[in-house]
Every structure is written in C-alpha cells, then in structure tokens.
Image 1: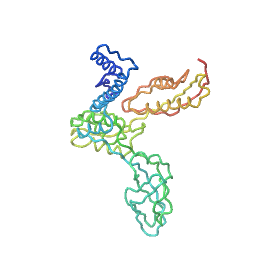
Image 2: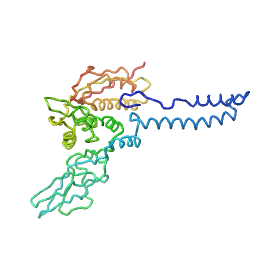
Image 3: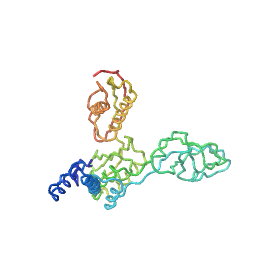
Image 4: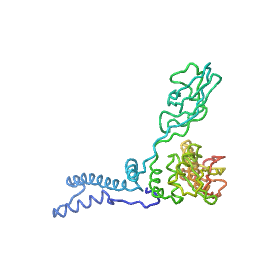
Length: 370
C-alpha cells in the first residue's frame, strides 16, 4: 500500500502463468511439431525456470518500490532519510519518579548509578540526590537502563529492589507509573517526516514547516495541528501515541524545535498547547449468528478487539470527528449481527480537538438464526 494517498505501482507486471506461456510458445516455435503437454519433462524443466524467473521478477519489483518513499521500509527507508539528512528518531528509555525512604544521621548522597529493579528492568536516578540528616525521604527522577517500550507500564511500587543496598535507605519504590519509553521511529511516521522535510527549510512560518519540526522533536508524536489563535501567534497542538496528551518534557522539546531563530519568523510567538479532549459515550448492542454458539468466546473476543480498535482509531488523530458509523462497520466485519450503536450521530471536531471514549456500554443480545 502506497503512502501519501498515491496510487500503487508495479515495476514488474507479469504472472508465473504468463512467463510459462511465453516460454512454452517460444520453445514450440523453435521446435516445429513439438507440443509440450503438462506431463512433458521438458515442460517441467521450463516450470522450474519459471519459478526462478518469478522470484527474480518479484525481487525487481520489491527493489524498485524500496527506492520510492511511498513504499520504502526499514533499512531502505533509512537510506532515503540519510540522503536528505533526516535520520530516524532513536529509541528513548522510560522514566519514573523514585522515592527513597532514609534514616541517615548525617547528610548522604545517593549516587546516580544506584540501580532499582523489579527483577525485569532496571532504573537509575538521573542525577545524584542529597539526603539530608533531617529528611525522612527524598525523590528523584529516574530513567530506565534499557531503551524502548520495555520499561513502560510498571505500576506504582513495583520498582522496590536495590541491586546494591544502601544501609541508610530502608525502602525504595516508584511513585509514578513508568512511561515515556519509545522504540525506533516507526516506518510510516519516519516516511511522513521525510516527506515533510522540504517544508522545514522555510523560515516564513508555513504550517507544514512547524508540523515537520514538531514531529521531529519526539517519535511518540502521532499528529500535530498548527493554528493561529491571534495575530502573530502560532499555537502548536501535539498528540501522542494512543491519543495521550504530551507531558511537559515533550512540550518543551517541541517548543525548542519550533522556536529556533532559523525556524520561526521573527514576529511569530510560538506556544505549545494541549488539544481539547472531547469525551463521548456509546451504548452498543449486538447479536451473534446461531452457528457461533459453540465458539461464542472467540466471537466475543473479535467483537472486543473491534471495539478496542475503534477507540484507538478515534483518538489517534486531531480533528477526527466522532464517527459511530466506523464502529458499526468494524462490528459487522467481526460477524456481529443486528448491531445498534447509540447515539448514532456524527460529531465534527475542531482541528485542535481529539475524541476520547468515556462510558462504553456493551450488551450481547443473544443468538439469531439468519
């Protein structure tokens, strides 16, 4: 599937059957009177060559596509990016806040290399932290020693073991859920940044230039809208993966990227704002066909996945109107019958708004015989 709404193209358009037909016709033309039946050993040899030729044709088609930004993936996409001096955004480690309960009688420094683990991943403080003799506890921002998403989602209190215990530290735990870890920038997001990169050379303040620089600030950004709420003011609205709002660290990085003198016009005041969250509630009723009775759990799982997919789809783009019709279609594809979704009304959103589910009521109506 081509990116950027471009049509698919094929650099090689020939099927194995067509190759075989050409080869057989050529053989028979060179050997008058010869007729290669399906059982003829000579035809079987031709079919072996056809298999190899088909593989070569597929590789040529694949190679041609990997040289086009609309199709390139992985290392091929990296090479296109490097040619334009747009490297792929690197992984980032998860972060959290650690609390150390202390009983020291003199001032003591907990060093930045102090390892705290849950037995799977390890976090260390970003800086040394001073525990004064009068302190009962100290807190410090900490970062995972493993880059990527592996360190995300550790619940409060689960980081509680020090690899090298400190005698004056009686207890340690994370007081926030770990988050902010990201893997290498994904192909589609990277390709879009490369596509937008020519806009980044402009210092006239065009919308796409701000979008390009904002997306380059952090690979967790999935969408950006740029508006001008007042004269000479540029408001940038970022949306993170999963439809989450950007934290202060990400917003600071976006502001730094978009507020450079070689990016913004002299008269622009650049600000970074949170999108407005618009909540929606839905009541869903569905039935299943009678033949699904023996495997109801499988069908219910498919229905649940369709609903979860819709919620992610709905919250993953700014300005995407609340569209129950999309959910209705997804449920039908999951073999649900007699589906009702209420309220069944499309709700348009502004560019700086994002939809988010709140109360989703799901009711199974029973089995029906179609």
